Amino acid sequence: MTTSDHEIYLDHHATTPVDDRVVAEMQQYFTEEYGNPASKDNHAFGHTAHAEMETAREQVAKAIGARTGGEVVAKSIIFTSGATESDNFAIRGIADYAREEGLGSHLITSEIEHEAVLEPYKQLEQEGFDVTRVPVDEYGQVDPADVADAIRDETVLISIMAANNEIGTINPLEEIGNIAADHDDLWFHTDAVQAIGYVDIDVNEMGIDLMSISGHKIYGPKGIGALYADLSVKTKLKPLLVGGGHESGKRSGTPNVPGIVGLGKAIELAVQHREERVSHVRELRDHLWQRLSDELETVSLNGHPEERLPNNLNVSFPNVDVRELVRMSLSNQGVMAALGSACASGDGTSHVLEAITDDQDRIESAVRFGLGKDLTKEEIDYAADVIIEEVNLTESIFG
Picture 1 (tube, rainbow, N blue to C red):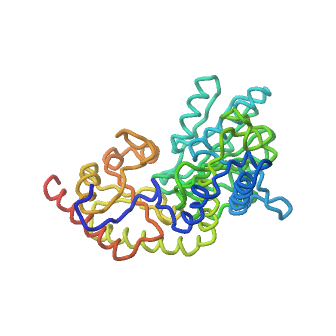
Picture 2: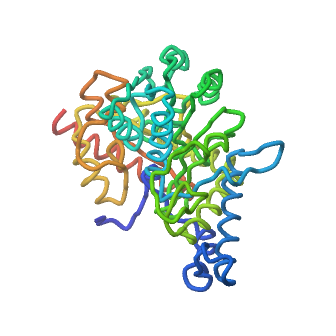
Picture 3: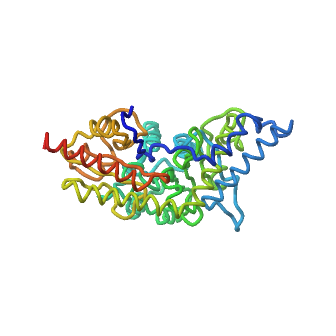
């Protein structure tokens, strides 16, 4: 709990506030138009709910470039409970199909994926699949040549994230997608949770077969996400959840209509305002980094200096107890940041930073700042003042 009058939220990689326009769009589907889309042929409430869900499906498909012959392919969007489900669905859906069809049992991913990708890969490894985890460079970026070299005749899936949730490094998706497209019965999945709204993603141009999306990282509601599945791949995906056969038989369960409507509006706004948002958060991010690097001699940047998310700043403060810094010193003064990723519980060291450096102090002293669209330069200056003061104080005592 903060003891300050200030509330400077710098943890937008963990979650974002819901945009007022998104809340307004969702509201009536909680209290007025509360029908079940499965009842679309029975009464008006069901019909309205189904129609709004299909509108949102088209909004998502349009935002990511899911088109055929210039027409938006809304059927390529499967609504889920969030990105974790989408990642698991994509990975297990292809793996189970490949196993059933006898296509192959080799999977490729990277060392710095989100746990929602790494954990299902571990499970499949225990079930007999062979997994190759390609390395990353010093900035946390995957080399497409390493992906190409890892492909075998029995490879069925490549899963490489669009942008890293801790250090913000952006991967060369189009190059990887082109490599995958040169092989039969090989599909390319990307977790684009952090990239949507900040990176121009076109699934067709980039050769993406499967892509995971989250609502609450783009100023939408929590508990809703989507999996894009190219129609040629969607027919092959084995369901993760079975039951009433919703979502074209691919994802059973009563649809979360308010969440779906919110996701559709949020992604529409994210793409519509992408350029201005990118410009704004990049300017603030660069200003924060300039302040820190000018006034703290030992601070160092983690991640790619250029090819990174515009709202991401991940830095290390050597010889500083960053748990104390983040959870007490900054938080008590209203500055909210994060230790690595907030998506996993526990205090384990970052597997992302371990993949890019052997410097244990750098790994253990990393702090992630995730900037958002509503922050101001004055707020960033206040945050910088607090960070600099607290780091200098710690270094003077323990340095």
